[in-house]
Length: 354
Image 1 (cartoon, rainbow, N blue to C red):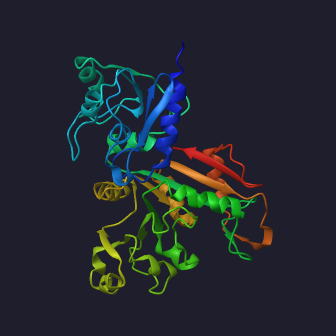
Image 2: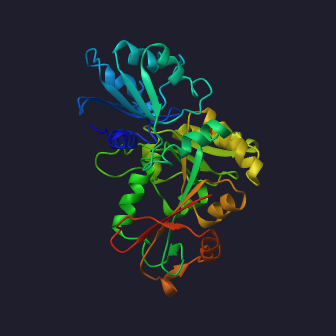
């Protein structure tokens, strides 16, 4: 009987997608255990990154000789805060292991196969056809020691980013997708200018999602953030960082009393400044960041090559005289974003990878 390995790997990736952006510096991994053509167990990396998916898939089943394990990423062989996953694979008498990506972590890279073979467990790398970019953020993390930075912006059909008549530019379906998108990131970066203007919460407001996530970084070098904002109601429940100049130390006292955490930086003027900031927040445990701010900040990211992905929600309606700030056109026409196959009831979603 011919076994469709990609079918089981696709199932594992569907599990991994569930916790993408929720596993801190560890990648979200999916695992399924298959015996006689049937899935007998499955697991995904737990929230905050531990335990790993292989452990979660195998912990509650007895020894399963003859079973195959399908996992999205090469099983770890090093001991960190938890034992290596290859140990439980051997202990549970798994016969074969199939994985879609080699782990770029130097402690594991190409080592799982060698270890498992010495224990009588066959293993094979089967590159994924349907999820080839799933670990884009994890590879960036390991290669550069910074988070993946994605931007998000909403525009009208005639490229305006501000609607002077109504609060929203895109339709309700697009806005729901934005909340789902936020759920795939462990933090958001915005600016005091944008938050002061919109009085935005920048959280996930869909039933079933954690409304106290993602964490929030607010860029405010001149410390102009208003003291009375809707997001203050979330300060007790989610980490909110005010990123400001070291010259504002005394002024930050009142913000600390409200519940803000303070991060001091020198400036954010060029690519080097952004990289230093990104490395700082990566060390804090953030691997996927969504930038939601105004056009000025977004253009700054693009100009300084300080962004990896950009999501553009484009309305099917023009704003004409009610629109403001349509300088996006010259930038968006240059980058040629790709239309994603998502039904937004008239709106369109584009993505650009830099």
